[in-house]
Length: 634
Ligand code: M6R
Image (cartoon, rainbow, N blue to C red; front, side):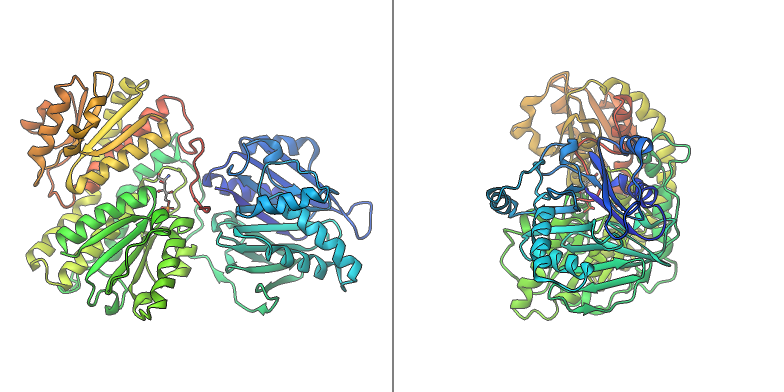
């Protein structure tokens, strides 16, 4: 989703802005731009150079290599279209009518239509279809008035103008503003969209997420909602919406600053699939060390109040994170005995269930920035506080891969899945990390509630410790197998994935993976539901991919697969090798493991198959069209 980078300092801004934007590319975007202010040839007033290009960053780079963008201050943006098509005129930065104020924004200004109409009545001509363009015009209008009123300094004038305009905006935003009359002042602000300030000596970089700071600084301060910051080469001042100065210390970004590169792999997605054994290994080392007490078999750092007297679990998530949550809910119910419900975070926000006591609420988001998930958690916290549910804050848990994210600041109890930065838009290793987090939680709750015997707890823990090796073998064996199989499906139009029980969410996840990166229509179904309608879709052109692992529904899934075969569907099995699984036209074999841990393995051939189909279709696997890695708008 949109990425913001803004700099004030003493070096040429545009190369640093471009470098920052490059690091935010993985978030997904369809156009890019930047604006700088230079004062060359004039003493106190500068001029704006604004460059924008449709498509990839390289197009912007080409533009800049011709004419450049001089100045030590600037704002940059990668845009993921919401209001208006991905065209140059809709790309950010947006300027006021006199080209004196430039703004980049990430978010959605919900009342922009009214604001735009008002400005149009005053004679303002809009050049874009965006919601953002109202902002520079409004700031310009406020500046004109403040000038007449004779506000002391220009910097203060810009600050007051931005603050005034923010009060008019409804919705979510993170934004950065520059003005030609203050060529050393950068104003940034945020509300319900992320924005962080990175500190170095005499130079400050603001960005939508911490990856942009790699190679620049590790000292970072996240802005809170409704705060504004005034940055000059001399320092940073932070204010709340009332104009009260806020004092907070920046903190150090944890974790090593790894280079974002694909290594020997053609795509990040394939690299990240290959990183999964390591993700599992590290997870086990952190949370499942040997010799933990049987009453508390997982090394989670949470207080007893997180688990005590919990009667049910509600989980809020979107996309792949929701699929991980569904496996989690299955484990929490079937293994740990706790009623568990998964909600689309976007639906929960406007139709939550009636409040019930003693609920554990879990928010799952790999990026930690998904607007719907954060807002759903916030809404839940607010409605529980009206009921004086004092235990809510201790009974809310976040599962994320980004420990420095908004989720980690919003929620005290966090499971950091520690999978390392995931660049491919299609989640793979973070999905595995989320699954593992739920295994940990389910085991912990089952042990504490004595819902499972010590033997059962030990068995699942021991089996989990074998997962890294299983994954290693699976990935190595299936990479070639799936690459070969993928050739057959390059021109396929529809695919059906079937799963049941704990593997039904894996069927959903497989369908999502295939859709996002190959643009092939795919549906994931509980295998037993196929005969209630979707079976009408089947013929020889629709492959059916069936997940059949030993356990309570093994035979049932095979019968459902037979129903598809009888309709001439090409049948692919994700199943252990056995006499029964010879019914499949193609088998992607998985080892014989307990049904409990099977989702950790069944997902692997499905990720690889989607990857190879998309790669063979020649698509942009890592940055599929229309998608964003971090969905920071509603
Ligand atoms: O960062 P989150 O886990 O909250 O993201 C949620 C979804 O946007 C995300 O899982 C999306 O579905 C991915 N593109 C899946 O590959």
